[in-house]
Amino acid sequence: MGTFRPVFPVLLVMFAMLLTACSGDATRPLDLLLSPDDFPLPGVTETSRETGESNKYEPAVQVELTSLDFTVIESLVLFESVNLALALLSEIKQDQLSHGVDAHPVDGFDANSGVLADRLHGEDASTLFFVEGRALVRISLSGVDHAERVWDVARLAREKSG
Image (cartoon, rainbow, N blue to C red; front, top):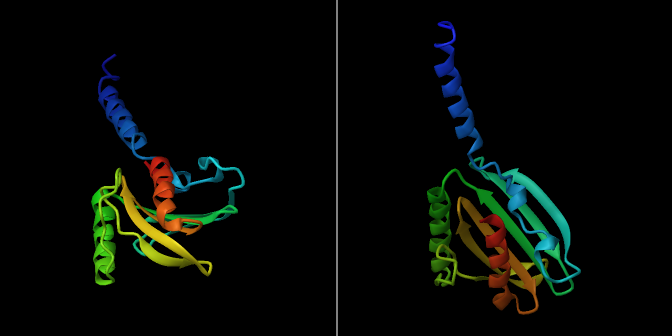
């Protein structure tokens, strides 16, 4: 019996390390992106999905969804910490301020950029950035009433990435 005593603490420590490793965020960034199933409207299709990494090697993913009424591109970069995501959002907001775009709080989006007038596949569009957890998310939306509807799509993306 005496030979098993030193092994028990080692096994206990190894088990604790395994639990700690497994308790981390194992969600794949691709699983955080919108899909056609996230929209209440029929006829939404996925036209592209890409994976990669940012210039600092954080996981980065993007999806494009289309319907008769809109096109949306969602991009997401998953950082090691929420502070890193917020720091990059702060830089985006500073850049927007230099172009006359100011961020205003929107219900549920404390950490967001202003809505930028943009172009998507040659059409007028709206783009915004927000932080949800460790993710920095960009939503670009073209189509009917894109400036008003971009927040609705952002809410769907926030629910999916949260």
